[in-house]
Length: 246
Ligand SMILES: *Cc1c(COP(=O)(O)O)cnc(C)c1O
Image (cartoon, rainbow, N blue to C red; front, side, top):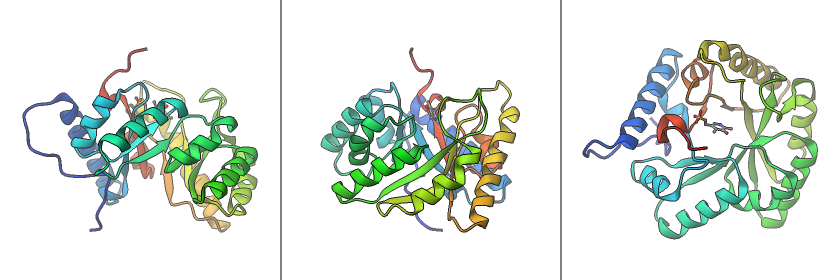
């Protein structure tokens, strides 16, 4: 089995609610992956850390987490610089999971390993230009809007293929897959058709020649069904860190 940096054995220690949450999330990921006939190591856990302070992020790193998702560029930048300065020995990945404004594209390229929320040709061109200037290849996912009420953001289904085509033509972007955020439902089974839809869109796009191995879908309330529908990246905040203060 190949080494997976996202899932690591947790050190044995006394009861700690954060550690218990992390273990429970891993257990659910593993059982859902196995039930869907996949290897648990193929589902990556992205800890969503908006409003979570750096002390708790540091603790989560100590407990084995290596990938964090942030929603706002400025908040992320402060945390990333802090973690880089104070825990340089850990290889931590940072993911942009929130909406990205074009005027933040430059910092985003400097800060994030993977941007989940690419949703327009204009943003793609900006990211490509900044990545070129910075000397990097920016990994990206395309966020797809599957319902009117779900989110304000994401590319509508009919504009997906043209956007994928544009991204593929840009030398400094590496397209790795799709992301979506269904509306919130109390009953996670209600979110399932949205996850299935994203997988079908991915399969259709792959049939026309794109390679889109990653499906970023599933949050605390619905990641189990998202994995059953083929998710390879779950973005979990509340399930790890508890309810966010508003
Ligand atoms: C906050 C957030 C998450 C995590 O949500 P939880 O319900 O707390 O797990 C996942 N994805 C995105 C884009 C988010 O903004």
